[in-house]
Each structure stands twice: as structure tokens, then as C-alpha cells.
Length: 72
Image (cartoon, rainbow, N blue to C red):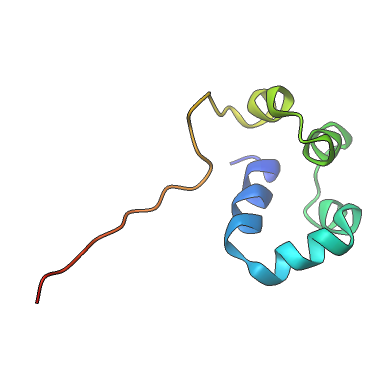
């Protein structure tokens, strides 16, 4: 998995990391070891570059959740 995709997934599931990213995105990007190109794409919210760098396609989400309902 790419470092960019890993960071994106963690930002979506880790509130503390997301808060840290909001305060200092560059520090989080450095800590996760993103390349300059990956960091720039994330900061610019450049969807086309993010897709190219991560291998994601249109309509594909970075996090898959399964919701289950259990009748008792």
C-alpha cells in the first residue's frame, strides 16, 4: 500500500491524527514519509494526482466499511 493511501485511511479513522493534521499537516506528512509529490497532492486536494499516486479509481473509496444489523 502506498504511504499516501495509508495516511488517507488513518486520517479517516483516527480522530487524534486528524486533529494533528489540521493543526500541522506538514509535520504529519513528514512523519508518514510521503514524497514531495504525494504531500503536495494531499495538501492541494488534487484528486487526479491522488488517484494516480495511489491507484484509486473514480468511485472507489479509500475505506471500505461493512455495516451489519443483527436481529435479536
